[in-house]
Each structure stands twice: as structure tokens, then as C-alpha cells.
Image (cartoon, rainbow, N blue to C red; front, top):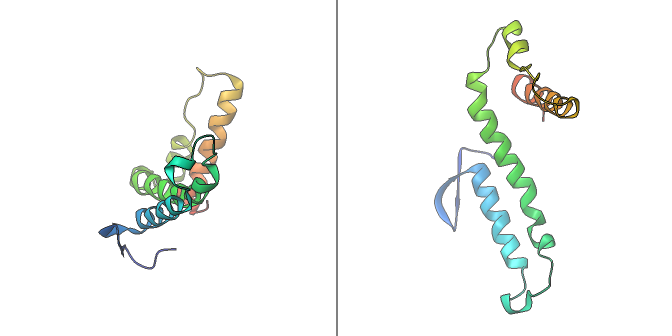
Length: 113
């Protein structure tokens, strides 16, 4: 978790915390790779697995930062905001979108992830 708005890394002078964590994870993934001439037929998934957590956290923080100011404060307006019209999509797709809306509401309104 970040202790401040920016951190110093050897890769850049000042990066936001989520980006800084992502850069550190990427550097670790690159160090885990064998030399390029040995990569033919080798899965790179284990080397890049450490990137998933920091990438998810950075994406979530970006989404929250961009959408929270747009979210209405009134409860009824929030209900409308998080229940878009889904009449033009299939039942399975509508269920998927409904779950995404509930997760987004939980993240933006209550701060839960």
C-alpha cells in the first residue's frame, strides 16, 4: 500500500504509487526471464504473473479516480446511475453487466473491492 502520493524509483524521478509498484513488478518480471536466445518454446507466464496484482490495483484506482466525481450523491440518483438500460442485450450478457454494475457500486459507494 502506498504511504504517499509519489515514490522514487531508479526508472523515473517521480511516479504515482500504483505506477511505481507496476514498474517494480515489471522489472522483477524482466529479471526472472532467461536470456532471449533461450526463450524459443518457453512459456513466459510465470515471469509475468507478478504483474497481475499491481496492474489490477492501478487500473482499479484509475477507474475510481475517474468515476467517483461523476457519481451522484443522492440515493435515488445512484440507483438510476448503477442500473443502466439493458434492453438491447441478451439475458446472459445482461446478467454479466448487472454483476459488473453491482461490483462498481460496491467499489465507488462503499470503497469495497
